[in-house]
Length: 112
Image 1 (cartoon, one colour):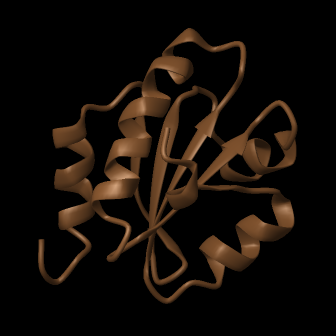
Image 2 (cartoon, helix red, strand yellow):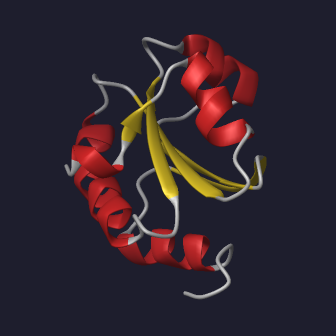
Image 3 (tube, one colour):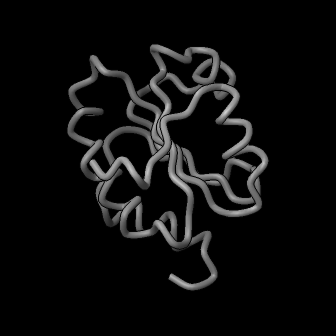
């Protein structure tokens, strides 16, 4: 994964990067034990690199930060949450394809 484009988030940095953002932010909720999450990390890294100049990207390890999972009411990993202007606008549950992510992000960006 291209780590330089994806921030590992804590409860505090989640609030700062995601909830207080005026732009588009995609967040991958994952667990280390989850085989689908391990496969999806490459896809999320690729989309983060592709959209680095238009969006912010973060990941939350739900084992280390279960309070985020609970607060968001998420029950399945991987889940990608897309926020626009600090508000949750799209939830993609399970493993998503690059095309699914592009479509979801483009829906929130003025220029795809």
